[in-house]
Image (cartoon, rainbow, N blue to C red):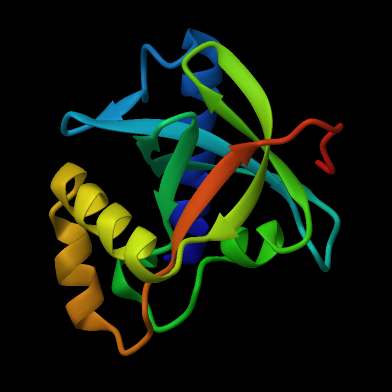
Length: 143
């Protein structure tokens, strides 16, 4: 199953890049971005299509893995590293932080509004699903 998801994610990313987001830029009306991170153990650069929201200048993503009991690899790879985001034809470097407190609650509600299944995913797992804020980075990327 994991290999199939990886292949589908790779195909999605390739189509997204080739069409500058015209294909793969949304899923059931929810906007999709490409997040590129560098593996903290392998050093390999990987791109993941993710649903996103906006919070002012920042981009918001949810580390849900469909309610799996573990965080996604991209979430761990963001810690202490910069990454890159592509939305449509635009690309920029980002640094990530996990939203906490009232900010997290506000952004969680916003993201559930974009993708209601996030609420179901949270019910499927005992972990608190992270809400990640991606802020523009001013220095060159790690990936």
